Image (cartoon, rainbow, N blue to C red):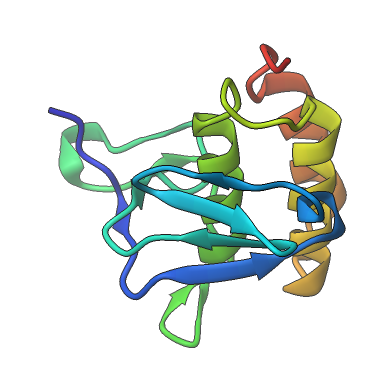
Amino acid sequence: MAVYLYTLDPPYRHVHTHFDGVEFSNQWITISNGRLTINSQYSWDGCTPKVQPLGLFTIGTPDGSLRFGKPWLYYPSLVHDALCQFRDELPFTKQHVIDIFEEHLQQVEWPLCTLYVAAVKRFGPQDFR
């Protein structure tokens, strides 16, 4: 049984032009009318890779400091994770998902946007349609 760092509650919605014209729905996500909805109870690991030796501390890609009670990259990592998880079923290319992630990082004003986008390009999932 997988253990995840975060579990979403309530549902989250994200709008992006790459979602325009896409109609998709499964147990966890829905894309309709240019909007992605990620359902409550969806779980993910935040930015990866990271490990927690003996559960004492975290080594790896930071999710950022807390902002409004959640890590800075809580929502960008959520959207990226969901799109990558269902990449075999969705009509998006790797570049589409990177574009969505990059624009989300810019929206939340993440100062390491360029570094994180480069890391996702190089180390993120490569097996898109």
